[in-house]
Length: 377
Image 1: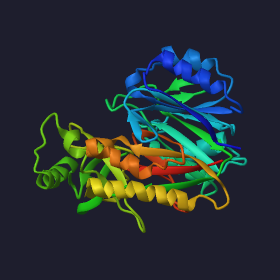
Image 2: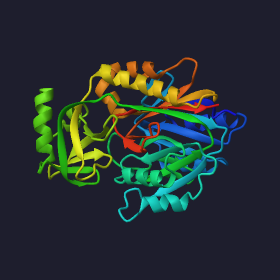
Image 3: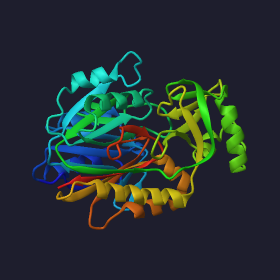
Image 4: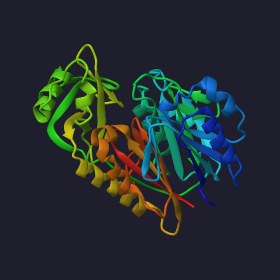
């Protein structure tokens, strides 16, 4: 039985085009669910989309992202609908910024049985403040019994809004989790390299790094990055420079977990996509296009290598960080070429953070990272 039976693309970004995709998808055989990937520039709202989703008799999972991917092309406007012939067991976890929620308890209570799931697909509101806490809760509940792949939905405006497609309509500040009875192989790599550190995170508040080695975080970061880049931070260019200089959270045995600083707050704290634990150690990283492209090709190789022997792969799902596009600019086509195989359909999203586990390692919420999922027939 195939996982993705058909993939349909509309590059107009219109509601009418979206409706046409759904009609085409539902006209195919053995449709048990739908994966929907759409662009933020479409301007989809609950008012325009929820009545359409409400008419569907099968479950949907997906989100709105800065850009989407089909074959070797990325799209700033448009939608993808892919049919699932294995019915996803869907669960919505709400309140993803609520500090009162114990996500390990909430996930275990809401999803008491993973049934026959071999792969878990997770999409989150990428601008929620407790994504890493949710991911930790999922891992506590399910461990290494299945593979995980997904990412953060949302807008590059960094304004939070409804960005997830669910059976309840378009939602914000939540996660949608789909358990799937399909084999998979997952590859995870980023290619960013140390230029300074380590620094101890002496004060943080979830996604905000407030102090590094006891000093205001931005002052430490500013000194290193201005020297390395030859550029000077001003009131309106922080992200334009910072996109090339993320943080790496130290961990044993593998690549660091990357955190993307996106805003400086009034106190000189650095607001990141994803949480940065207090008392952890971080490095300031820098990338080169060549190292990032090589990392993407390695992610593909690792996904293919880890795919169970004897199963047949039909689809590659590429979850890649939008900030890699912003960094590589016109050279990003090289990354798509590195992961594309003409014999295997490829679809994906350019996300606000990536969700995956690598091999038998801990499940993580990444930034600036390439994740390639190889999915079963």
